[in-house]
Image 1 (cartoon, rainbow, N blue to C red):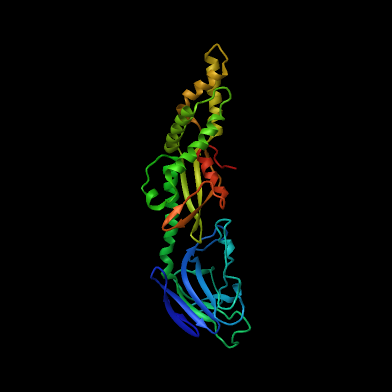
Image 2 (tube, rainbow, N blue to C red):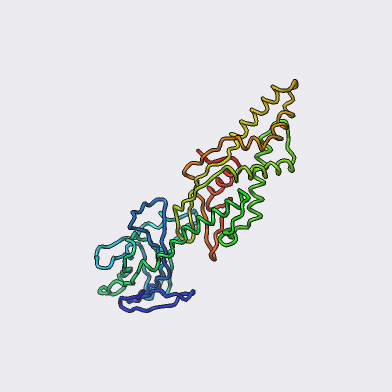
Length: 346
């Protein structure tokens, strides 16, 4: 990618790859990175995609300048129609979103941020950056930096990778299945994640009985049976619907065991106990149902989640962090709750 404008130069990034840079009177622009982005708020046709460009802008003038989306445009090679940036907050994955590119910039200072454009796949473009202050030369041309989309094609691997990482998390944490991708793709502590799910289940399980109070050991054994049944009977489908700023948003379509349906069956088993005995000891009836818990799990109807079960994941150093209790993505806990029986179907 070659920079052009008043002056152009090729610079090395920290990872050794080539980055485009260009200078004009009072302004220096460096295209540091780029990747294909996704947004749940944006639809794409088969031949278009969204390209996120990480840009550093330095004010080399002696006056303050102001940056806004009006200063940036993309032009397809051979076409003079201006492509305006998308609203980057439409691509934000979680509540910790920040964008410092459109800002007030003092003399000698620089800022880095991301701009997003809708582009046609496989084409070549030029990123144009216009002068940002009346103090700059009026006749100064826009800074232009070439952008070849083919260089960013491989970044779509983020999409499959995020889905594979979440699949590994679900398999290992909730279903007790082996999945080699966990160690390769997931940075979240496995043992802690498993224990968190177990504790949540145990609390819910104990609350399912009124007179019979399962011990911690009994509740733990019930969770082992529950995970075994879940692994055998449940299913899931993962679809990435958002990717921006090293964060992914993955939709989970889940068909799984329902605590409500299980509790209903437990009630049926209690009634059957009363029908076959002369006493009406509710504690014994509940304990009898507990002893038949595995059988109940095999008979219980599954429940399908709604289409809003979306999980936020963050990528760092090549691995994905997947937190169920996430301040920036509180909806993540719905996946944990769904996999211990409270399927998000509302």
